[in-house]
Length: 76
Image (cartoon, rainbow, N blue to C red; front, top):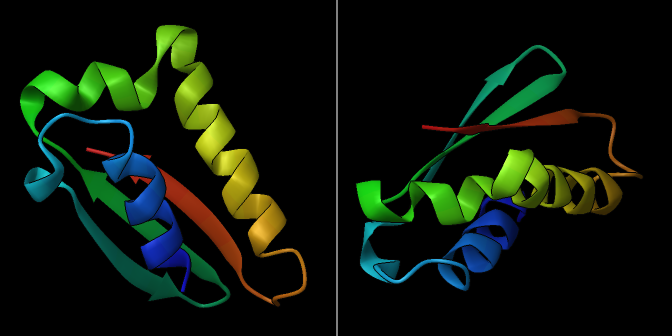
């Protein structure tokens, strides 16, 4: 569910929607979500001073509030 949420958000930020790929790996009680986008769209996902990436992390944290797992977002 969290993968789809992040993918939906990122696809609405970038121009090349087909290049968006979200993978996850679980390490104990931590789930790492790795987002990869086309090279020209990387800046749009990170944003000025990382504000867009931080906003995505905040949404992810809010969506996972009642779960026992912690989610970490990494942008490749």
